[in-house]
Length: 552
Image 1: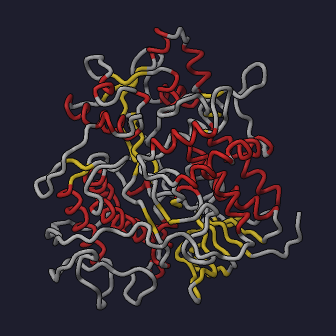
Image 2 (image 1 turned 60 degrees about the vertical axis):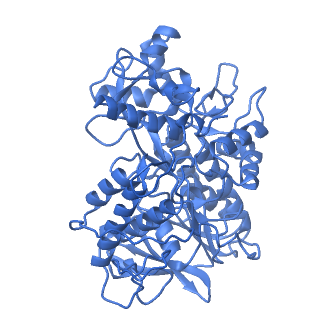
Image 3 (image 1 turned 180 degrees about the vertical axis):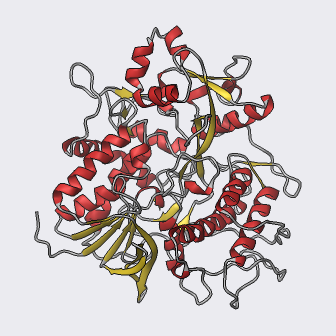
């Protein structure tokens, strides 16, 4: 290990991406501090069930994995980023094993690999059946503690500190007070923004903090319109509980009230079609029958001869939770619905995690590496965190290049006034309902305009009076609308620095990201990947056949 004379590095986030970055940076001799919003180990990584893609058996290859990733990305994935992902996959999975992750293995010691939707081969390594994320999180947290890397818990990112055009630290809220933490580099690993939606698999900490802070600092952000909705969340009281795609990979089916496998109406791969296709098929069928569709794991018992004990052994977490909520999924199909699961867009980076702002890196779900394009391939997210976390750490000591194209994510000009908002008072629940209904799996132009008008009205009500540009940022019109406070440090910017509570800061961040997400969606009038636009009265868009979206 090198001497502790390296750069001062703040890693903000404690999932696979952040902790991989922290460990590699520490091992390279940098002075690292990890900042986490709750306790170390909380967050999205620990909730991941399905596994990590990139374990290649006989007959499979990185090239085949790359092709599957590019197909799922609907033509928007960056080939160079995808090449990095699959090229480094074997080494990163081996590193996780070395750090203490016990992946499931067959009797002969080989990795037991699973098949998931839109993969052409079984290449998903899993641990504890359906507890892969928990196993990875526990191992990496333990290694960080053992390495003596300082961890500051219950500290919320407020803003980035920018000086002379470069990021020089972060402002955090901890123990009721705001503190500035200077550094040579900041690595955002803050996760996504799932808490924008009424139905989400994301934990409560996923409020878009890193993306919003990057926007205010002036970093390029792209592809926020692409939100992946996981098809199968258990319909039951209590916190949202995901039923892993691996269940369908093993042979479980989706059926309607008539017992018919309706997803084949939408795609020839049926239940193993890309997630966006399956999620939309479920939304439509549930609406048509006025009730949830069902996931039928009893098909495994009938068709494959699985016993209830084998089902429980393969999916112990799912078995336990479904039974706790009153379902015997070995004997009866269980009700499921889609929920917001993963944000493909984020802070624009190159293949080493560098953003368009010197000194600022981004890794994991808050980053837009270009891997996922318009739709993430199942189980690529854990792999992306491991691969690009390691690469970001390696780039910490390197001279800052010109950076990725800072025009990425710019929107096409649109000339259209917003409708007058009739929004009631802001609440987070109201925002979440609005985003689910208007910016969810099925979107319309009119609905997006309504959402943006409401979000702008809420933002205006929370903003001190100041001279602002009262036009739609992409519209050549003088019609006044609720003001959009500018980001990037202007005197009229909405800043969480004036907020006095964690919830208030999170609300500012959610509204910031929601605004940019809707603007991005409006700028893409045609369906692509996870962004699906249906015809509306103000814009006649021919809805493409779902069977063609993501199809081979």
